[in-house]
Image (cartoon, rainbow, N blue to C red; front, side, top):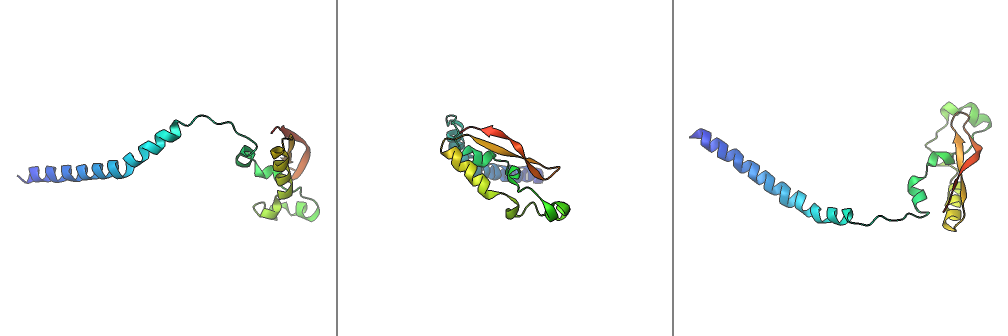
Length: 120
């Protein structure tokens, strides 16, 4: 008799757990997932550069004392990036102009002259 009660107890626990999971966790997410899945593919514009930009290409070139102490340089600090160059590139792309994306050489810690051309 105890075996039957034991089995029924666990069946009730699993049924409650499944009911909770289905109605409160799974079912509310089905409709939004279907909406997202059915969205048409979108054409990206200049704004796509923001999400795909390799920010490390916009590092300042290191010279002098900073280059000598490169192992102590904080590349994560916001001042290590040339934010003005990044913003001007995005502004030019926004205005429909092609931009040469900088190319940063990580061995010499300097920006090279040859950059990749990015069209708007």
